[in-house]
Image: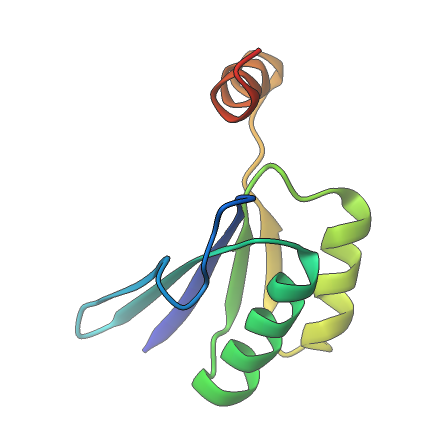
Length: 100
């Protein structure tokens, strides 16, 4: 089974409530909304070590430094990817996230 996790940041997140798992016979998608980078690192560590997640997909709000810290956390046990688009797509998502 392929196991992936999508992680997003939101200031008002409660990682105990703002999470889900969608599963088929061959695929398990975890999604978690975290409040800060510390929570993102801990969620990543736990999901890779305890759940065997093989791929981490981060929302566009993660900085390069955040991504590097997540990469260090998985220690080569999972791929780390960032959901970024082209210039116009980035403008659209920034407006949605920030209201400007």
